[in-house]
Image (cartoon, rainbow, N blue to C red):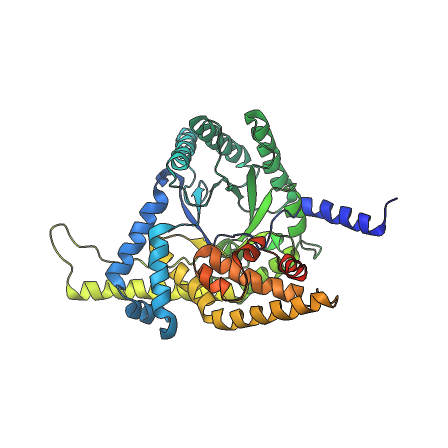
Length: 439
């Protein structure tokens, strides 16, 4: 006989088919976008080397870097050291091979060749171990004008990748679907992936989808409803993330270019709607990009050095770009957005610095608070009152899991909460309490 509990569990399992993500699992702190024609198997390493060179040139020590971005002096040294270590070992967490704005509209033979070359380069990176942990492509939007081009690019890319790799795919492979406004666009991409996976003998759902929210109609439809849950559901369990396109969105609202900024109040509204609409779904939210690059305006002429004034102007430009990017990333983090776009290698130091400072500033208080929660809840388990603070406990645990995943927090710092490595590996506050209750 089916009980109400059985029906509740079955209903949740059905819901989970369309909300497959785990909010406590590792989410990349950024997605780096680069033109498809420029992608190579070692792109992530080359970007890391360029980022390290920018630090060496314009902030060779923690003090000067802290002054440039506004980093608190008390944590400047550990943040700087961890940023350098990150750039040396895993400079890019997620990379998107861009066939949309970063590639442009080209003749079909040129895009065909670029799609196949990108697939082969991903296969080479997979074999050589040089790919970032997350990787994928952004195709053109599934509009009436460009849907066939987007489908052909995806097919050529995946076919070349599978042929060159002997049928293997990266473990975390994504297709970013831009300018989504109706569920049929997401469903068409899901159908296309179903067919490719079936022909290649791949497990269903091997390739995940991300949707890009770039228009007001993606936030609120004409009847005042929010279409985001329907857009996600149209992916039939493939949708893993929703990325916010700041500049298309603000332009559509009539905001002039001078005021199109990542922390504009109109963007905060869109982000909050996305958070509410997709809360609890496991869908990863990603913020947009800072479009002012930390780039030096002067390059030394061949065989000559820059003047002192030119060097000072270069330093000022890079520092200004760093400070803006750092501020934008901190703004996103404060609003609960843990991922964003990066477009330039010199943005990598400030991406990681902002993320690491966010965690290290809160670490002492979070450590003490989680320790108290575990102790108090573990005692409550014995008296039958276990779940009162579980949601807050999971939120605190997620703080440490996110920090650990990106390199902001060390394993020793997580264990200072009193949790063992085995408990941390469960990624579940409830499982930790249950385990302690059974001791």
